[in-house]
Amino acid sequence: MAPTIRTIGTYATQQRYLVDFFGEEFIVIVTPDPSVIGQWIHDVLSHNRFSSHPLVVGVGVQWTPSSYYSASSPVRYRSDSPPVSYRSYSPPVSYRSDSPPVSYCSDSPQVRYRSDSPRVRRRFDPPADTLQLCVGNRCIIIQLSHCERVPQVLRNFLADRDYTFVGIWNSQDAGKLKRSKHELEIAVLLDLRKFVSDSSGRTMKRCSFEKIVEENLGHSGVRLDRKVSRSDWRVYDLRYVQILQASIDVYACCKLAILDHLWEY
Image (tube, rainbow, N blue to C red; front, side):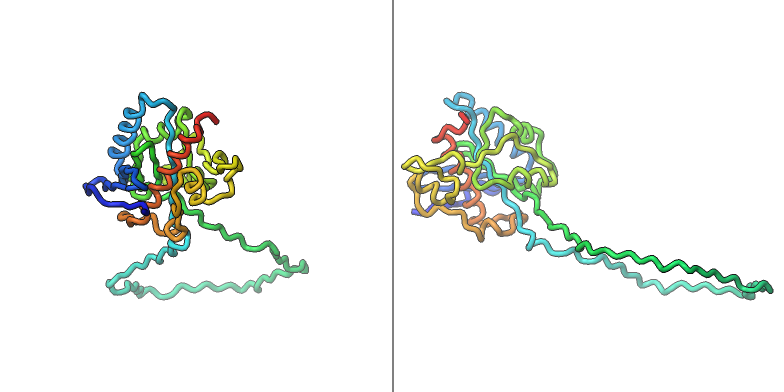
């Protein structure tokens, strides 16, 4: 049976969903609200005070491909006022000189400048639109592109080196967070691929998310759809497929990181 998602609450500052991941249920909050973000972090830290291991956080970042960004339309100004004209009855002033015209001559050759350097076109690098976090059965999707500000508690949370932050195929994630309008920084972000192995003990660093989940959790068909990953994450109302994929990504990363004791690395 494939993972499913359903809405369990819609509020002014957040939406809540319940995801069923092969019989395991977890809550997903989608929000841009600073107070909701702060409350989620408070609940996570309170619930994990007596955990048998250090805090492990599944992390994911989504951004909208540059192809979705259209060039800004030129600003046009319109005025219905008639043109203003000025008229003067004063006679024109003329100047006369009997001196011969002065001419300048130069035998120096005309200087021309030439550049064979190709024109440099800067490639647009989209910033992070969402940040997904998961601890245990609590997940949150923070809509960074809709946040007017992020709470200091989130910055402190991400900067804490006592926590283990882990994602997958995430070489760009830290940079995308830094280039977001909130300039977020994360302490150390691990890539799950570098630590997991198959049943024969062979590394899985070149394997897909689907293969890693199947080998280590026993669930087949759990893949990250490229079409969903490359969709528009700037929208306020994210689609079910976006929320489901983003939350399963961080939920599975958190679960696998605990199984492999990644806090020991």
